[in-house]
Length: 78
Image (tube, rainbow, N blue to C red; front, top):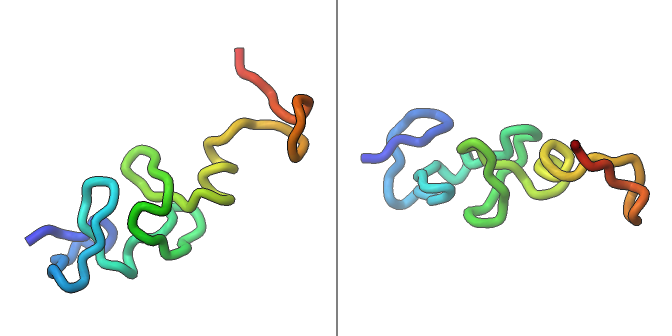
């Protein structure tokens, strides 16, 4: 029986949600930053952890900048 990566308890078929190659309890599949409950396939993944697309993944790993759009808002690493 697979174990949930969040709570480490067994995941039964009726309560199973599969995402990022793991089986989770529906209530345990949450954003690693804000804790929002996520649906299977509707989130981003980084280093094996799920994140909601907006705002968490974008804010943590997206382009850095100071505006809300346009060519002047992005900074590029060297």
